[in-house]
Length: 143
Picture 1: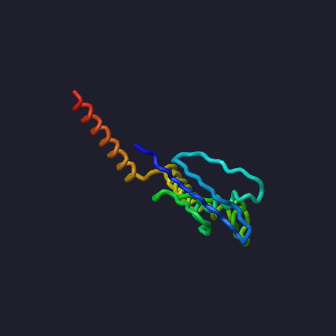
Picture 2: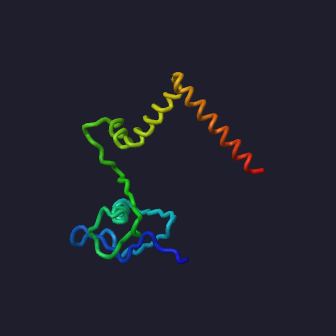
Picture 3: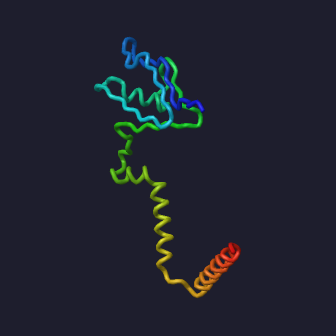
């Protein structure tokens, strides 16, 4: 099976103002799972290149694309924070979906620590009997 590139850039040039070319005639391609590093001095275009690769910056000459069905993310050097929130509130806003899952997990876990009423005990005993019966049937069918 021929391996396909998951990212491809061909003869890409990025200019800001006339005479201010940051990246010139760049060609790159990566296979799935490639580990890459971009190094250079300040102002050499590293962040610009990453924004183009992530599809954020679309104003360039040449060609750059990611394989259909794939996505690329970009984490800026300076995150965009809400100035009306504290640092903790900004972080909690960013992880709110994961926090909601964790909160639900903790809520369910706490219910396991609560004493069960007689009805719940009865259901638990029935489930245990069913599992024992099923296991007995499974063992009996193996002979």
